[in-house]
Length: 312
Ligand code: ZN
Image (tube, rainbow, N blue to C red):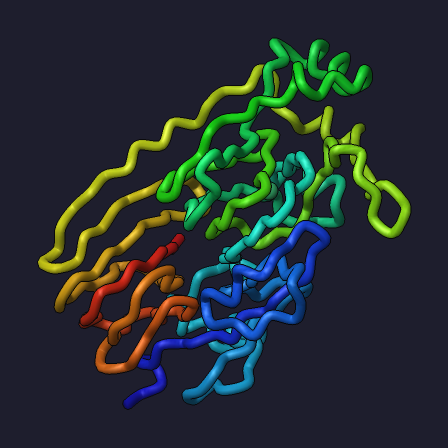
């Protein structure tokens, strides 16, 4: 087999968080504690650079592979691996936050990228909720509500259920709430401005807020970003197109039986979120993350499984 035709399996990076839980073990991960909040499944970010497991590039970091073997990624001309895929287990509420766009991050965050992200809800409590958007009618009212700490008037909370999908653009206030398990696909950035943290203490102190930056970047009024999933069938594979934006395209693929598919993409990120089966004869199961490199050719999938797939 030539090196161009290997799938690139990655070892996830697990992160403890004050709000994390123990549900990431449902994906077969060896979690460090019962407050494990995030699994970085496909990441070349310096705060969690995944290592290749097996094959020609066993032991390489994804960032090194991007640097030295760009041909695997279709020669994409970007200075860093552009996407990051995480699974998030929120046992408690996450802080209410917002991310900057590329222009703001470049100017204020040492040339970092901004952050556009999207969420596929893997599971949640029966009365699950999340925060997306706010109720301020303009920037002045936004500033006033934040300065007067009128959080209940400001924050827009909506019900959520398993299988929901949300696109979160820069400038959109958001928070994952307790009891939610989410797969997040995002730009490769770690810049977060915390607007409000429910006045919680961490080691006896409140966590840092970023009020000035938040007011700078929050879009007011809030405009809902319309997401309309489109479903197509490729034999035994059901493909649900979740979102296309300037940074990524995200799909859900449900396999039930045997099916073949081809991707006309420089590279494709795959996370198995449910079930098990094989890909070109190799076993895969819930919790696996891998990259289909450029010019890989036809993919033959067999089994009963669901995957979230992202590409540029
Ligand atoms: Zn976020």
